[in-house]
Structure formats: C-alpha cells, structure tokens
Amino acid sequence: MSSPAAAIPVVDAAPQAPVTVAAKSQSTALRSIVLVILCTLIGAAAQILMRWGADHLSSETGLMGLLTNWPLLAGYACLAANTLLLVVALREGQLSVLYPIIALTYVWVTILSPMLFPDELNLYKIVGVGFIVGGVSLIGLGSRR
Amino acid sequence: MSPTPVSSMALVLFASLIGSFASVLLKAGANHLHRSRESLKTAIPRLAAGVALFLLSSVFYIWGIKDGSLTVLYPMVSLGYVWTLVWSKIFFGEPLNKTKLAGVGLVLIGVIFIAAGNR
Image (cartoon, rainbow over all chains, first blue to last red; front, side):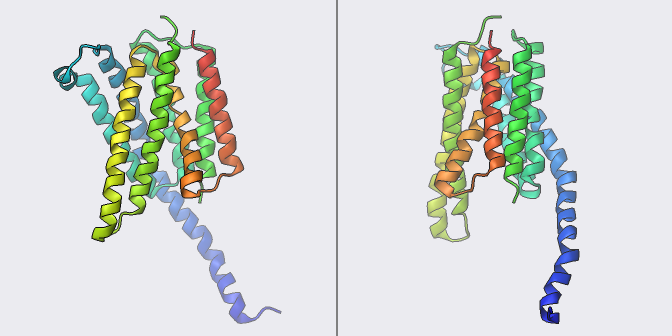
C-alpha cells in the first residue's frame, strides 16, 4: 500500500522529467548547435592560417617578423574566437550533442589542407579521421550528466 | 610532397600534452572563481598560468606544423582529449566510464591510422 504522501513526488516526477529533458535538448538543438558549427569553421580557418603563417617563419624571424606575420596573427585571433564561442556554446548545450559536432573540425582541415598546401589524402588518413571523429563523439557521450 | 618528419609529430604531441595541462590550470582557476577577493587571489594566478601554457603549447604546435602536413599533424591534436580525460580523473576525480574509454580507444586507433597514412 502506498501512502498519498509517498505518491505525490512520483506523480510529480513523471511529467517533469521529460519536460526538462526536452527543454534542454531544445536549447542544445538551436543556438548551441549553430554556435558550435560556426566554431568548427573558425577552428579550421585557424589551422589553415597558422600553417600559412608558419611558412614565413625561420630561425632568423625576430619580434617584428612575428608581429607582421598577419596570417599567423589572424590564426591566433581565430583560435581565441573559437575558444570563446565554444565556452559560450558549452555553457548552454550538452557535451554529448556538441562534441560530435566539434569533431567536424578534423574533417574540414583534412579536406582543406590538400587543396591549399603540398599535402595529400589517402585511405589511411580518411579512415583515421573517421575513427577520431567517432572517438571524440564517444568521449562527449560518456560525459553526459 | 614528402612525409611529415617524426620530429614534427613529436612537437605536436608535446604541444597537445602542454595544452592539456593548460586546460587543467584553467579549470582549477575557474573552480576558485567566486566574488570574494580571497578567491580571486587563488584563481587569477592559475588562470594566468593556464593562458601562458596555452600560448607555450601553440609555439610548439606552430614549430611542429611548419615542416609537416596538416592532414597528419592536426588529427594528432585529438590526443589532447585523451590526456585531458586522464588529468580530469587524477586532479578533479571526474569519473571514467566505458563510453569514455571506448572513445579513447577509437582516438588511439585513429591516430595510428593517421601515422600509417604519413607517406
């Protein structure tokens, strides 16, 4: 026999739980996902810019050389923007949803680098990136609270 | 196109290791961020050290990618996720579970494939 007092929290909990989950996944689905996709593009741009900037570096590069290396500086700016946007996105959304999207950065860089630099793709690299995207996604799923 | 030198890969791996320590310091600093002056005294040096380590990590990273291919070197940055999980467990007692460990396994297999594709 269950007493009415004990039944109240159970009755309360039943409709509440799905609503909370739905509200949270709703917020993840909208703003955070857009933010994180933007992050992956900015993150990929950071990699391309830093690689481009690195081409202009040598052992003789001084401080002036660094400060006038605009691809490198732009790369750092993208990295900073990427980090800040990610912090905002992760505050609002769920890691389990956002990590698999963040891992898209590996896909963009792998597609872009052979188009812009002396670099080429092969089956090993494609399979490797696939495993890495899967792995990062699982780490995000495992971090679900 | 020539293969990415092992020294470049070592630099990028070292950078990812330093970067993971930067994350630990930033987290340690963030944990102390409250509105009291005392908490700021603890938090700010940790946050500053975290930012400094991130910058140091980026120096090694750029040194690494200078003579190598991004299709080989950038995926290796994903090892940072592995280091960070280990430090989160050790320093903050965050639980590891089977899903996270499976993720670590896939990342490691992925990095092995990337290294095999470096030719």
